[in-house]
Length: 299
Image 1 (cartoon, rainbow, N blue to C red):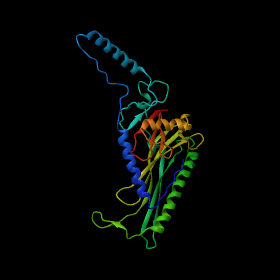
Image 2: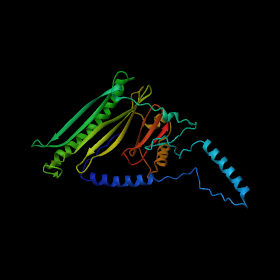
Image 3: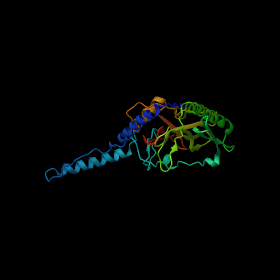
Image 4: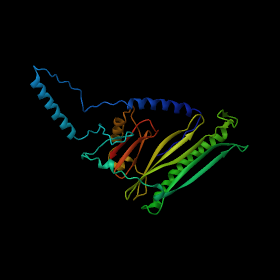
């Protein structure tokens, strides 16, 4: 999964448009319809009392049957976490929710360390016009095949840095150090930056490791923007793998499930969404935080 960074003066307007789209999508996603409990009215009069009781019994039986049925692909079930939609794509029943209840957490400090790569870009007069920082997480020897996994991670970080260096050249050639905004106290120089921040470690096993990064970029203005990126690596080969390779499902089927579960009006691509895995589940997320709820399925 490649990471492409484009920095130019039109970036702010594009980000604003995307934010407006995301807020609209969030509002749409907030609407809920309970398909499993259709509204039913039972008349209870002396004339029809017996038929009324029969109707109630039929309704009760129907509800029992529904509660025993398998959840459909497009249906969702709550796991107690309002930030995650749980979708069971398997044909197996999981009435106790064991896959979701037994998700393990992993301490990043136990399995590896972070090396910080910070670079500043200066103008001829010594003014800093841009900087970037990359938190490079590397696994220690307690993790199977750590050296090969780390080589794959190093390649990902180098790809990110190549994009940041292009941004560095842009700002060095186009920045005006006199630009500032009036904040509290003295005027402050607006210094654009990129920050590839280690987000969390979600899984370490004999089959895969899985972690997430937050690519934060500040272009000036009120606040920065960000995109989330999942990195899942096959421990045995040391290669980054796609969701399709992990699940055995086609990209089309996975993306269609994500579209339905997130309530998206567009046809999503892997440029829009990404994933990570836990010890029992696979979690799909929209790259820009807070636009759609994550979707979690059984591995």
